[in-house]
Image 1 (cartoon, one colour):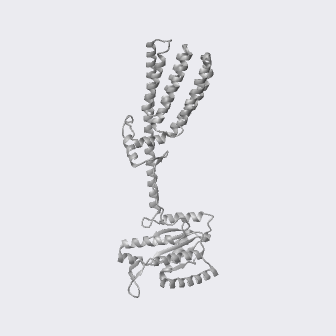
Image 2 (cartoon, rainbow, N blue to C red):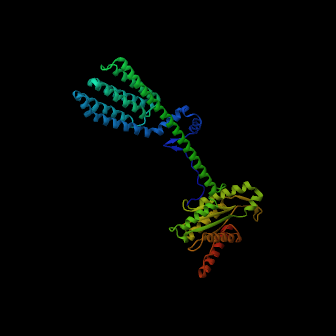
Length: 445
């Protein structure tokens, strides 16, 4: 159980570890109101997008590098069938060099890097692979020359679509691969120059189409990110609004204490909890004495200030994390104790009574015998539950004890014995009378 007000912690929208600032939120709404092709991120949004996309981007890139390295090594026996005279060169290039280059790129992509490093890594990797296989194509010669070039063209085209890098670096990869392909193609002795140019142009058109596809994927990915971001911060705003509504429904706005509804919820939970003995549950009803006189003479602002100070005092007088304090209505408060004994409940109630009196809040509506204004006091009634007693009945016992305290002269604590029977009732009544006299004396001192 908790007493007092629970503060609503400030929360930040978090979508894949991306904290949405007001500037990002405003930019998200602005970009989503435009055409998809006109989406251009600010530097802050780029950082958020790259941070969010990094896990997926890294996994795809590293998976590519692993599989291409394995396929390259598996290409060694295939190359032996195509060019058996160049097995050693094939082993060096396809079995060792190309996997080593992919391994180096893999290490780069293990951690987030800048867009420049990511793009440069891919351009260098694919360009180096093309040159390596181009050298192997020259060595193989004949019809194998064209086969190797078509193979590296195919792989590079797929790489442009697979690797999610900045569009500028995709264009750089397209240009580099086209130049490399054309450079090897024109030295192919099996074809003429015009055929080499035609094949290179055809290849350039295909790889350019792949680059445009990559750009479209990137734009759609950015829009999906914006939509996810908007859904996240709107959902977060809804969650915060719901929490605020819940607080308004269960908290007293003046004091920050739980209201009557939250008191009922807590009591219901206590009554259903088999680990809490009913005989250890106590209700303390407390009411500020002659509060109407204070309100009528000093005004409602002074009355509200008084209620807040008394509420804080009651909250500080109970066991933190064990007891719960509620504003039950007007100037009336309810304290719910669990795992309490009569001595403990009496001690807490007396502590509340004395600390409220020690506040020295002047009530100009009442006067003492010396014709000076008296201070605000509080009266309290204590009642314990027992098996078979409904919480409403225990609350009534505590309320009756409170009014007995009022009739007994105010500024006292009265322990209810309404649930006792027979000799227990007579004994409890005697104890209650003695304690009432003691409390009355304490209140007048």
